[in-house]
Image (cartoon, rainbow, N blue to C red; front, side, top):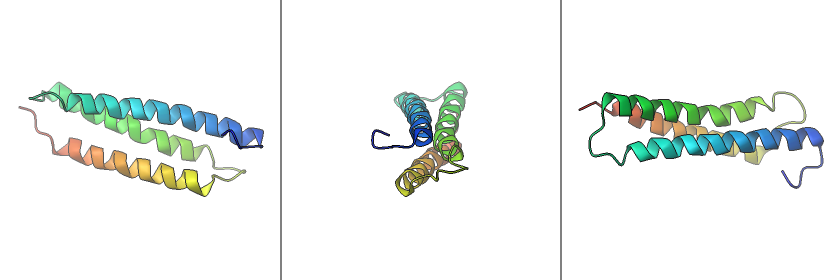
Length: 99
């Protein structure tokens, strides 16, 4: 973001930074649920909701680059990796059964 000279890119990077901040917070909340010894149905639902919300961040970030200027390849790769990580967390959440 600091090295961007195009004002449109700077704005898009700023939006992505906010989205990633929220997504990381969502994953942290999901992780805190895993510290419980027994997960209730409510805990499992919350875990899944937080993981799903986190996965929206990279998707929304990428959607912001639909028009020119194009999304830089490093950001595109980072979005994919983060989305893949969220998908793994979602699969884990789908495997939980309430006690």
